[in-house]
Image 1 (cartoon, one colour):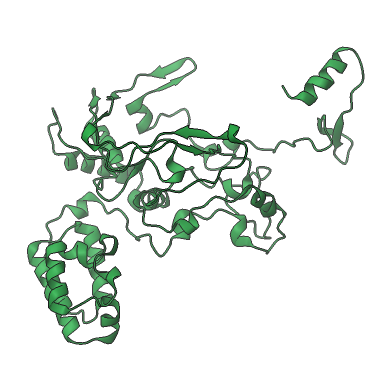
Image 2 (tube, helix red, strand yellow):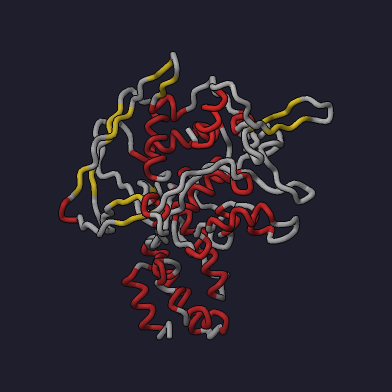
Length: 408
């Protein structure tokens, strides 16, 4: 109970008059009222009345609810998947010093960030607009570095935790009962990012905003499964294609995968300071429009997000063909082609590695100036595990460096 309401309620209970502020429409009909001059004004529509949530069929249970169960008033379903405790390998555990951070909860009422913007006339969509669309789900992108939080003088709002250093290994068991093949595939797909566990990371724990909680999950063994792991995921993939064709290339999946990959500049992953929020709302139409709304992750990092982040298993599991590199005479076009092939196969055969080695060597020998300019930079060899390092592997890359004398 607020101090103001406690003060006025005591007077009201004694039969005394209290000030009330109100607003009427043009016909003199009461619209709303409050106990202060600047009382909070409710929006016309709740979140449940805004797209896409208003179109959800809540009376129909989805795949996740059928697997993990649900509990509602007068209706519940027991889950069929059970996660055991994750036990640490103590040889991999290094405790870091405790951290103090300020954690803020989501404020969906802040419409510049939580609704898609803008109207045709440049004004904001708000929850007063029935045609407004929710921006999406709140998710923290994985970070490559630890962010040191800025703490104010009020320590009462701080939360503390003791993180573990990177490299910690935990093992757990996942048990299930009476899952169909498609449901097993769905579970495996969610855990491994659809058979991409080595490329993408999950984000867990309250330290996510500051770079903690980045986790990779690896399936070490399986018991009592009749098929290979990829076969179950392929069953799930086929079922999803029938339900929602092209789902792996949907905007929602691209956002998820982009945020789980890391490798992005922290310059664009900072929070506005408190004073910014008021400034965003006060900004006149046409001014600082790039600061007034929240762009999607893929829009912000459009030059770093692959067009096909995850390809269907039906494509990736095909036998790898021998690469035809005869038409590539410059490094830029060769790199573009090899990265497209890498997204499909995630590795190259020894035969294809040999072809790539010889092709890069021939481009260097041709003294193609734009290609040599790129290959003189370390970033095209082994920076972040991209390009030549991932195509050839470390051993062949080192040999190619010695033979070409690059980079320098």
